[in-house]
Structure formats: structure tokens, C-alpha cells
Image (cartoon, rainbow, N blue to C red; front, side):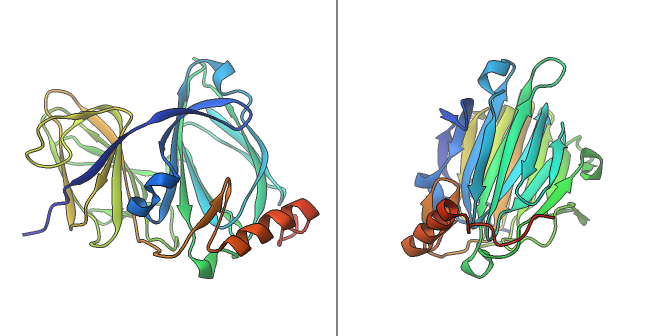
Length: 287
């Protein structure tokens, strides 16, 4: 019998102010990294008040990480130091590998109802890949397969595999699974996650039971960190549940982290900021 993952820790998203004045909820950050390696940070931005998000995230650098942006409602215009420009629209995903360094901006806009709702996840890169060339995987809504199970559960597969169906994001070092799962009332979702990989769920809507026999359901804006095991068993009762289910292979390397730059040593971190100041930060020319 496969070992079901138990709940290790439950965290609640906390309000923070980032960028040029964007109000968002920080689901987890640096303090939780030991339990979530290779993941570094998860933010939930959700508002129908433009003044709380419109100033966005003006030009800033990244090195040593990957940023994953998933938009449910609204748009995010982006541009970068390599000359890339585009829009991440409702249902789209941008998986950006900053690698050796990139400078970019992200400017959010609401939908027709002024609603902006999305998530940004940061994933670490191992030392051997921290200085790789920057790249993007731009995934449009239409490219994300939605699997509907017999019991009515729907799964949007962004990365990883479910029932033999693979998500569009590929060739990522940490072997991630990134799923958007919706459970109707009174259903159970069993899903295998490789043993040894770190895994968590973040509740978007409704309530779910994230461990068999758990005393109560867990609601929106709550993070569930799982212990090790071979699969998760998640159920809904009298209300539907929707959540992100994310897992990845731990890197198990030291971290030296300040703001948008994550390296392995303090010396590497100092080098990155010195290069940013003296204009030698970018290692790959503009297109």
C-alpha cells in the first residue's frame, strides 16, 4: 500500500507590500525554505481595486532562480533586458529562468471587472545551473491540458504528469509538478508524488481535507506543507475545493539570498550586486 503524505505544517498567507506598492499575500518566504526546498517564495495577488496593484513591479534584477507566474484573471505586461516583451493573460503561465541574470519589469492590469488574480512562485536553481543563459517558457491558456476525471475532478496540468498526460512546461531541473485542481463536493483526489520530493498545496477556493482523518477542513489562502510519502489523498465534503498542488526535487545546497537574487555563498551574492551596480550584471546580450 502506498504511503499517504501527512500534513507537516499549515501556514496562512500574510499581507505584504511589494514592488512599487502592490498589495499581495505572501504565502511563504525565506523562513519556510528548509521545509520547501527547492521552492523559495509564493505570492498570491488578488484584488479588484486597481490602486492596490497598478503601480506594479518596475525594472528589477534576478539571478540564480526561476519565477513562475500563473494568472487566473487579468493581465501582466512584461519586458526584459534581452528585448522580450509580451502579456501574460488570464489562464496563462510564464516560467522564467533568470539564470545568470536578467532585468525585467512586470506591470499588472485587471480584467473587465478590474479583477487581478494570480500567483508568483520562485524556485531555486542548483549551483551547476545558476549561471545558465536566461530563458522563458511562455504557456498560453490553450496549451494547458485540462483533465476531467470520472468523479468530476478537473486538473489543469501546467508541469508534471497525471494519468499519462504531461503538462507543457518541460526540461526543468527540479522535476516539478504544478497542478491546478478543482474538486466538486464529496470527492476524493489521490495523486502520486515522487518520494523524496517536497510537496505543498495552496487553497484557492472552498475547503478541503488534506489528510485522511484530519479533524477539520482547510479553507482559502492557506498553505499545507506535506511530509514525505508516495501520494497525497485530498477530499472535499459539503463544499467544493480548488487548490494548487506543487512539488519538486530538493536541491540540498546552501543558500545566500537577498531580495531577487539567490546564490549559494555570500561571496557570490556580493559579486552579483556589485556587477549590478557597475553594469556587468547581464551576461547575455540583448536580442
